Length: 469
Image (tube, rainbow, N blue to C red):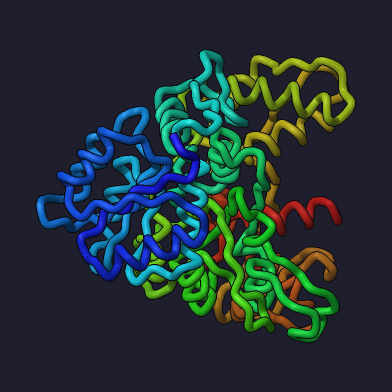
């Protein structure tokens, strides 16, 4: 098969000739078919590296051709109109390599076809076989629910389709993104992760798309940005639902055109990345609340992967605990350590609201503080939170309900209203976070929802307080 052979299946003469002209100028050998029947005939006579497929053809549905794919079929790139985006997503789930929305920009067409040709059946195969052991590309566990996750990752690792990962905080969303990268052909290129909730809104665009020197105060040098750094590889956008709406528009434009524009630059640059995004929020709730664009969601949610919480993974929790304990003991310079019987019982019976992250933090604390080689997990909480101090009942005398040392008294006044005088913003923030966590019985995820922040934000702040104290 010629490495640069492309089949165009398009019944519109003007569009087809435009595609042919652009691809031939770029050095591709192009064959044209205007119906499903002609396409089938061409595919039976010749092998192609890639095929550009219009879904609406005079003698049938382009999706039918995808259903006839064989091992030697080309990498199909679907072309659709804006109103048929749902059909394009269906095509991706049927095995299409990528999709383009009409009108197709020339740079986007060329970058997509180039990637499709590199993905052709005679290219180097990716290792996608599921292992017999208890792990898979960074995951530990062999429960049926996790095996389904592994199977999905293996099936779509080579696709360019965007993946939308959902799950509670600490379930392994970034591990999923890394597994998708390592299991596919893009593993030899960069994997770049951006946490949309950890970067200030005014800096996120620069972090994502880059900037030129002098674009804004503090831009003392050119910066390529995460999208360009991941060119040819995978771009992971964590906490995607926390992205500002104005930047969501620019991200959507990037997904549609395959072009980025650095802050302060008038020049657009082509970028070829596989997008994986994640959130611990319900994207449908975010869309209903006007905080997340529906068109962007459907662009990103081509391949959905829902990660199960640790409490639904059965005996995986003990396998995880043993694996993590061995790893942490080694990292902390400890010798071989074992979990006590009480610790095992705690691990198996605790619901682990913070999932794998909470289990890992609890184990690390127990290992670091253990006097010997036995791990005693006295509490399942990754962080022991001090309950909020009592608030005096309304109408009580100022300070009458408090008997603590003045330095330890609550910031609440006698009428139950917080007295903020003399307190820093950081102290007020910590009081509010700790109070919310205590109200929810230590459940970080629920406290985060109440405070309208991500659970990862609370974990970062708690880790900072623990380090400082």
